[in-house]
Every structure is written in C-alpha cells, then in structure tokens.
Image 1 (cartoon, helix red, strand yellow):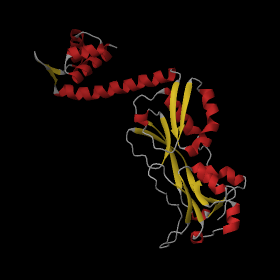
Image 2 (cartoon, one colour; image 1 turned 30 degrees about the vertical axis):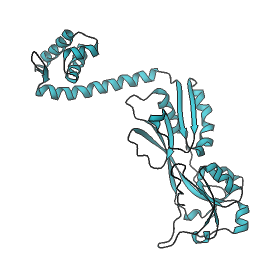
Image 3 (cartoon, rainbow, N blue to C red; image 1 turned 90 degrees about the horizontal axis):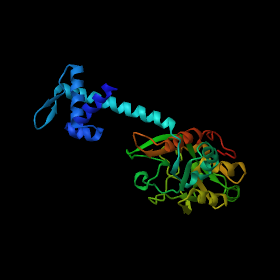
Image 4 (spheres, helix red, strand yellow; image 1 turned 30 degrees about the horizontal axis):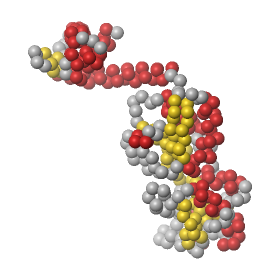
Length: 306
C-alpha cells in the first residue's frame, strides 16, 4: 500500500506540476506528498524530479517512469471499476432508441429482461430518426447502415435480408415476375428515408449491362410498417426486411418474388456512448440484446417464390 501511495503521489505531482496541487487532489499535505515521492526515489535509487525553489520538473528517468506508472494506475482503476460493477445492482432509468420496424422484435423479449432486472426503468423511443445519443441523453440505440460516429461504441447484431413481396391478390391481377425485367410496368410501394427523403434502390442483381426495371411508384412511405400494410392490401410490390414479413408470409397474406435475384443483406448494431466505465444498466442491456435479438435467423421464408 505504501508503494501504491508513492505511485499516486508521484503521478499526481507529475501531472499537476507541484506537491501542493497533487496534495489537494489526494487529500494530503504538500509535505506528505513530497515525503512519499522522496521515499519512492529512495526505493528506486534514482531521482525522478529536478527540484528548485520555484518549480519541479521530471528527469529523463522520471518521464519514462511516469508513462509506465500512468498505465499501471489506469489499469488498476479499470480493475477496481470492474469489481465494483459485479457488486452493483443495475438500476435506474434507461433510454433505448430503436427503429419503428424493430418494436415487434423487442417487445417479446422485454418481459424476460424486466424479470431479470426489476430495478431498471425502460424508456423506449421507437422512431426512424437518427438520434444523437450524447446530445439527447440516449443510453443505447439500435441502428442499421453506416455508423461513423467515433464517440460511440458498437456491437453488431445478426444480419437480415431484404426481400421483395406482393400480395397474392396483386400477383393474380398483374402477374408473377420471374426475372427482374418482368418488373417493367408493375406498381411499387417505396420506402423513403425520414432524414434525407431519399428512396433506397432495391437490391436486385441484374445481368451485366442490363438497365434497371421500370416500375411505376404508386406510393412512398417513411415507415416500414405502413409500407407492409400497403403491400398486404394489394397495392403493389414492396421491398422489406425478412423479419418484418415472416408472419404475413406464413399466413398467406404475402408472397416473396425474385428471391434468386435479390442481394440485400442488412445489419443492425447496438450503439452506446464510449466510456471507460460502462454503467451496469447499459452493460446488462447490451449483453441481453446481443444474446437474444436475432438469435435465430430467417434462413428460409414461407411462401417464397423464385
């Protein structure tokens, strides 16, 4: 313990530039800090500071020792924080932001999470807007696509696949496309990004040099749930993630088309603000969702058509 006290005194003095400043942080007198540093120097057999009546500065040996000691004390702090987290019950309000399309995936999981961590109060925000986690005080977010913010930590979830679907009533009236070129003249329901207003391209694989199919856009939606409802109603063909259409396909409300001509992998990720000491409530939610969300992939879908 004396050795650790000496390291604290030395690093604090080197960081702050004086025994008095280090003492204020450590709750010691300047004299006690100076004695601890002198004792450390005696143990090492080397002078760590050049002292004058006006200032102190690190020697060459002191600079080398300071770099190593700073890493040691940081690692020790991390180890102490890790032990403390194992003893601390996750509790408090926890804000989770997720796309609207994910609510039916999350809600079935929440009773188990709440049973495990009854002292956590979940504040769920389902929207398709890209939130700023740090500025808006969001603890964890689920998002897809490019995630460039270096202030955030990320953990990838299992991928999903984009699929083309239409209602049987629509296909009986307009015909079943068997190749991408057969889409010419069909009616489409398109998704529009809420932030940019752009319409994402359908991930069709086309022969080299082939032109994009020419479809008539009947409707655009900035919400995948609304798009799914419009497609189920027989208004046109829509492109949606596989997990969103699994139940309508099983009920016969939708049919996939051009499955062999689609190449649209997607990826959801968990995001949370970067911090040396992750709070227990965030840690348990990240671990829980990583384990449970998309635990089983939709390798094949009912009602699929080539």
